[in-house]
Image (cartoon, rainbow, N blue to C red):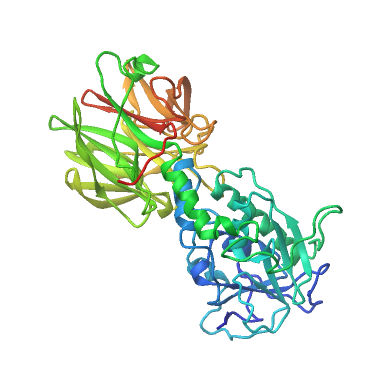
Length: 535
């Protein structure tokens, strides 16, 4: 059943007036002045929102949505795959493939007093609802002949560049394009590259600029339904199973055959890592896990003569991180990390500190759009939300420092897309509770090699040494040690003095963080690939 939201008299998003009379666009070469986009609430993703925002940019176009309930969508385990890949590879989320809420499309919905009418020039069906009624021409999207996002993911698993096609009511192409991706080994990254270019294709078609044919010499796009179905990608692929089984295989490979994130620890005898500027000769001990989860982002705190280690615990089956804690002594952990803070959103980077006689935590939860302060009521458990320190910001790895009579807050900020790791912002306040004032020169640094924090700032011999993530070789590829040269309300400067990567003393592909307390030192990164089984 289709429910149309909005009407011909509804302005487009942003309060633009409806267009005046003009030619109706029903095919290639003319501009679509009025568009209804069919979507399924259950399958809404970030790329749908980006698409509507883009096609509504024309001041002479009216855009509205119609909810349908006929979409199959992706297999249920696809979101788990995306979450796991994002965590392992440090990919930015939310993104084009992230599930979205219908409230994000409120600008395209009618108000309570607006009439509900049907009669758009173009109905853009992105929900796979071929039986839904429509008053105007319907354009449907397919990838290699398979409707919807499942076709896109199927092409990715088949290791081919998919051909996207917008087809009119008679099945003839309105616009076609062969999509590309920078990576074909990380499914989420490639999938989002394909989605971004799909937006380009659709926007071009609605503007009358789409081409209905591929360049000469290239294969023609497949007709809808030809050779493909959800249970097998054609005769040549049936033996490999359906799309859901392909995803399950990929999940298994990631969880049990790929490099595994881990925490390393050692008892400090002699110089620590900041003084050594190299790995210790004795190497590192691994914090053991059970194969069902990994540990990362170690933060240690010494209190009442004991050391407690806080970590991000990522359970592969649940697909999100929680904050866990375990007591430590010179010989190692006392038991295993146990969850102490869990929210609906993914949590990581548990920056823990002591002030005003209490213990506080600022965990990363960039999906919330805030930087939040928590207080321990029964350390190390019993955390309660105390305050929002900074609102309306997508921030990663918030780190506090008291310096020059003020509190300073470091975090990398993602604004308008791009990396989570290359843009450093600062705030300052008279107290760690705030109020926080943005630095007048934000962003104070744009550098993927040294912007993102890698643990607490350390005072050493009158200097401030800031551990940083060197992400030039990928998320968390190496650990840098940067000397802060200037930190005041007018400026900020730092100089990276040391870069530490994996090696013989820390085998693997990444070195990510540094934290120390009570004579113990902790790092994290990845171990070499080795098969692991569920116990």
